Image 1 (tube, rainbow, N blue to C red):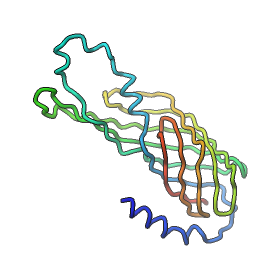
Image 2 (image 1 turned 120 degrees about the horizontal axis):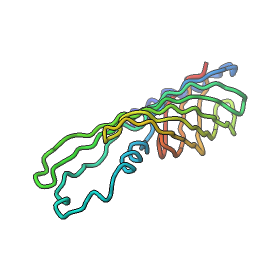
Image 3 (image 1 turned 135 degrees about the horizontal axis):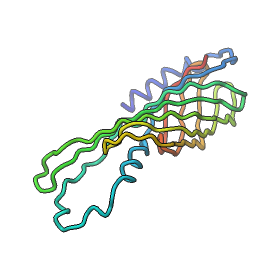
Image 4 (image 1 turned 60 degrees about the vertical axis):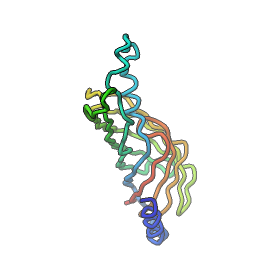
Amino acid sequence: MKQKLIILLFLMIPVMAIAQDNNWKHQMRFGWSGFPVTEYALHTWGYDWDDMTSLGDIYQAYQKPMYTTGGISAEIAWFHKDWVTLGITLSGNFTWQGNRDAVTNEKIKTSTSLLFQIVPQARFNWVRRDLVKMYSSIGIGAIIGYDLNEALGLLPTFQLVPVGIEVGHKVFGFCEFGLGMMYLGGMVGVGYRF
């Protein structure tokens, strides 16, 4: 998988290097991010540590590791000024976790969650070259969906990106590092300016 992504990026270099008219008004970005903190935060906040009241509770069902698709996002943005871009991001992630009997190790059920986030963002472009842009961004929005406890929730969310980079002209690739409820760590993707 990693080799295919590297090959795809190398194939995109000639497309990204072609000089284009820079009078774009909008851009669309599609990305994939690492660990979405949302489900972990919702799941651990809802846990009652006082539930274990007797010795027999150590034989209750236990949970296997939590798995996730990572955050899959789409964004539409408008170039407000040369140094600021305003956009709105829709991100979603699917998470699942197995539950097993503590004595027999039999699978009891698989808990799943599906969460969506809508986050308006302001991106501040602090390096603006012909081929490369570097930026920081901040966004505040909302999360809605079902968590692992199968509870429907609507909560506020935020995302802070201290540093991100876009490389290309009309078609570009991007990589950013951030922290917040959409993801903790990195996001990579492709975009298109029009």
